Length: 109
Image 1 (cartoon, rainbow, N blue to C red):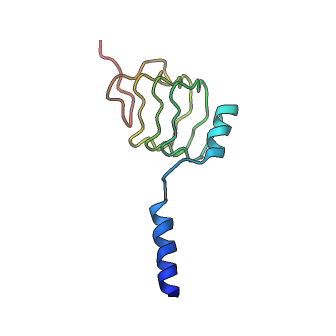
Image 2: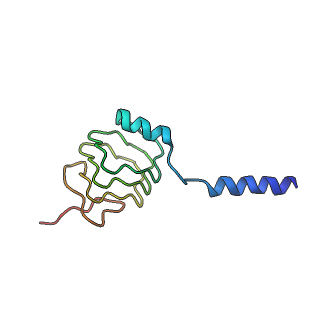
Image 3: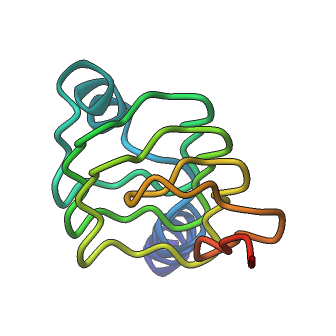
């Protein structure tokens, strides 16, 4: 019985890893535009003005930044695998085009 309970706890812990972002980190980012190293896995950051935000080393995996403003933001070391940047204003002021998943696809001239 004890081993079954331990097994259930392990499965629950593994199965719930990365299901959602840390709500306190999201609120801190919204209020201060600073969230270095925080966990925003799958967070919805659509349409937010994150001008000059500090997201250095943050976990942004599978987060949504559609039509967000990231002008001047610090994303160095951030994990952006599967992150949606479609329509976002990138750190350099360019607009991320359709297909901007895990990177900012810029318009070609």
